[in-house]
Length: 110
View 1 (cartoon, helix red, strand yellow):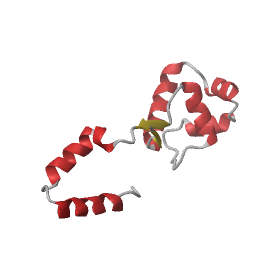
View 2 (cartoon, rainbow, N blue to C red):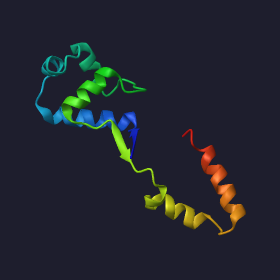
View 3 (cartoon, one colour):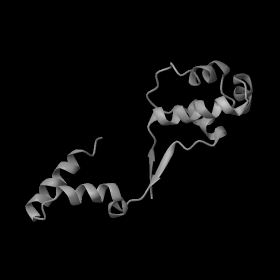
């Protein structure tokens, strides 16, 4: 199993939804998570741009029981979407398999 961080916009959307329904005030969250109240306010503002998970965001997510990471399997053959894409793309020849593999490896940085 491999842990991969979820996209930041998904984490924030889930946190905002949780907060909306939690009944907590920002002051309560600050006290309960030991995160400065102004930081809680900034993190719960839908207009604040975010690029990565900070320690403060991690604390809020931990309190809200929101997973920051996805657990993925390391066996690509168990991923139906990936296997369907390969099956519909590969022409069955070894040379085409090598070319597809090269393209996939080049996409690693995504």
